Length: 313
Image (cartoon, rainbow, N blue to C red; front, top):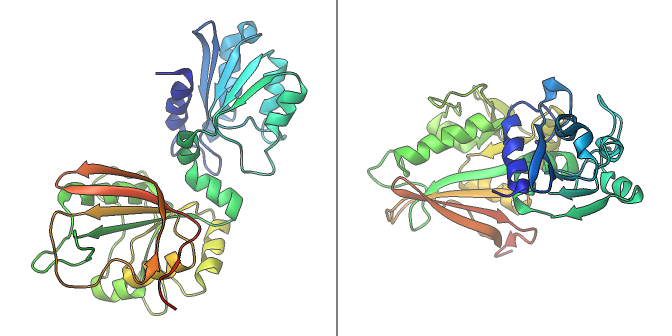
């Protein structure tokens, strides 16, 4: 494991404990020896860089700092990490990704102005690690993941089966719910299935907000306004991540509006031959596509790019 990979690993220790802040991990190294490590947790106040530098002490002078996110450049609950790094005498900083938060950004330039060598990796892993927070900060809306279980021929229903996907895939969905700030469906799904949308049997520390987009009555929280306005309102209420579990109508509306950031297709080894397809007449170009086996199913994970458009007028 490289020192930067160790920093990514440390950052994950803060998952679920950073409130409205990003995950950050830091490692101080000199001559291949690790002198200090740290990660961020909101309640602990100190930032990852400060914790690692405090462990290193005077040995940090002339050392290299590996950090997953650009050191902050503003006074908040703590002094700017960029100044802490400079005062510690760090000679080189390897940074995973820039900070999209305009209030905190600028640490790289401050370090460079002080004569510190800076290497910006623009590492995909570091970006993905904070993908929900980055979207929330930069776009003012939640990061939207669309999840759907489909047959090999792209249908969301299979005759004679209650579920399209297998047990392992359905457990993964509950894990996704537990990790999301909100879960949503459309009113068509509410009327057809009356879904609970809670996270069950996965040791969820908290339950997501349960939403229904559209008009009508539901035990879920109904959001009836334009999608973009509703997403901005949710973001203002602290919702960073939204798991979309709706049917084809809601999925198509979100894709046409360019509001889907991530796609999760749970593909079952069955041909349906009937029923609605998982999305309407939109054309999607995907990037960073991966496929993994989950039980008898295959999970395809991908990111839609910005030029999503309708196939037909």
